[in-house]
Image 1 (cartoon, rainbow, N blue to C red):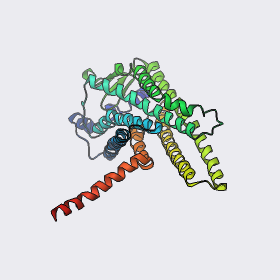
Image 2 (image 1 turned 45 degrees about the horizontal axis):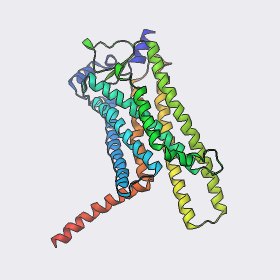
Image 3 (image 1 turned 60 degrees about the vertical axis):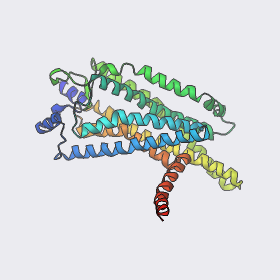
Image 4 (image 1 turned 30 degrees about the vertical axis):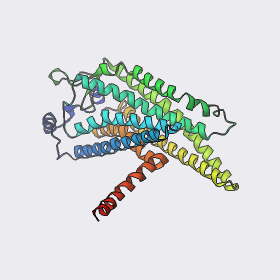
Length: 350
């Protein structure tokens, strides 16, 4: 039983490492002879270098549209907030995890650990809830006038600011206890029972019941949003299928066709985001639930879980950049500016 708890609660425990690996960790040096460690550091580095610039770009693109046009569409407001919270998830988890993978230790003190864990829990929760809100609104938007969701077409845009503020407040209040359990180190490097070693911080639980209950509460809280997103995405797919069959038998005007195409593209983008989130959530939590049922959990499984827990922050802005017209326009403008600069210099020189 004690051996089971040791492997269950310390998936990244230094006691599981080789002696040379411990020495390198203490010196802040990555062991380049360890293929798994090199691959892990490279994967997290790529993840971070994609997520931070991509989310900044998406956030600035919507911000620029708001400054120029004076307003944003409802879906664009949600996407703007989603890019913001994904950026902060990357800053509070991907960066520390990447630095830890490269061998940097003792990056944060107790206060830094508490702020990092508090911020990560808030913005991770906002990421899933905003994705759920986006899928719900898109389902409402494409629903027929006779649908029970039709009244929400005007109510969601009307109360969107209130909804987003309430979500921020809920996650701030519900995660107030998160900083209490986060510390940077322990006296004499002795890790107590029921402690997660995140490599850059430790999260400790008072007892086994607290450890299990805390994980299950988070799991079922996320699962609630996942189920709602899946239902809304399924509803969107059914409507898209019916719409495609209807379009084949009708000849509509070019204006109506372009409007319908825009809604179809937006719906497909939302369904793509939801599908990816469900996939990443599934891998993350399947590994977590699996860890509760086996005697020993391989270290690489723990690394995979952390990777998939933050992968959405990189994939989401890429999908938005590819599918959202406002962001794509910003991308084309950047390309045109970069192409026109050499021409302008040549002309002025002549």
